[in-house]
Length: 403
Length: 147
Image 1 (cartoon, each protein chain N blue to C red):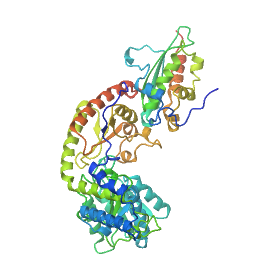
Image 2: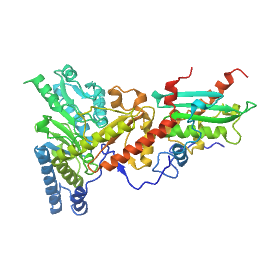
Image 3: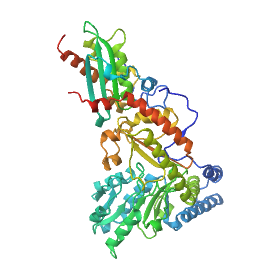
Image 4: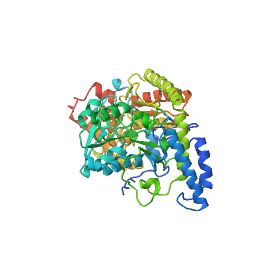
């Protein structure tokens, strides 16, 4: 296959990062250029920055239907997850030292949980079914009087499976009734703009949101934390964010994030409807062209923008590089593309064998994805499949193993 | 003197994980066996497993005096470096009138990596298996009763 010159980029890796919305850039630009003060300074330049920060925080609070003092701005979704897991566990350990997370959380949650284990906390990793959903009975069986925190992601970043968050919260509240109840956190990074995320509706006490997944700037995220919930900071040395996250506020990013979140929330239903149609047609066309291909994750309880597939007998990194040569950006769970050469733990958790995981590809659509982009992707992937299949030893070895 | 392969191996195009030679052999692999049903091989070697992510089959034909490789074909399941390194191995085995069998049995992964202008360090052990498959194919040939 020739490595041809590419005129157009078809970006189908929106679960990794989204392009900046021009409307977001427009509100950030004047701040980067003119609004340079430190919101903590008393003079006019500082006060101007302070007022801008207050307005951005109010906007975020309005988007989520929460109070401004329930928003903690951080440097990323990862930091928000770290802060939620470690910060909540440290602050609430007088009630117990047991936490529950799902086995397919983002590493920002899993590695933070591992760190707590090393400190002597007990962590339960809830398994998931073949679709990537936790079982409510497993959750119930794991709850103890010493459980202080439950963290289950709203939607999985790899396979797009949506967890029943409201049901999880109700189950926990019912289980503890009037006794001290564990704090419930959800990582909603992948869900914002695609699913309803108001914390009160979901019932969660804490929620992670990342700007870079919703057409906002990179380097800013937030942790929603219900008023009255105690948290130990990870970054100390300043009064910012009510002493829960020290450091001069990244004003332009926060303002851009606020704008991106407002746009995401107001357009959620429309975006979800549009992307679900595109997604389902894309999946149907892929299956028609490559009959051995199969979809991972839940067929319907999945993010409107997520298409995660496995193609037997060919390998993901090879597929990715050939797609890239045709201007198409996607991602893979294949070990061959990972720095540690480990296959995706999420795909292992839903029961996929290593050889199948090697042929996994994730396409994540975005609000700028068109039908034409996806048609071109189906045609290109079909050609790549035939090319790589003709090189592949797997069909030969599977057919007649060497005696 | 043998050059030690550069671990980062991105000399001319730092935005690419792989060298231009790796890219070339990945996008235009040499000596792939498409029609294995009708290929008369003197020896076959299979190494790797799908679970490890890389698996290759190598077929060889040997010249009449049974000292050199006459033809070397292959099929690989694996990542770009696995495909490119098998392709390069097949070129090395057949160039200049074909490699002597005794040399081919000692073909090292380092020699293949060097000809590829390097590979990323994490790809060394898993994806460069072509020399092993070639050795197996030669041993398969040698194990057959002389005709």
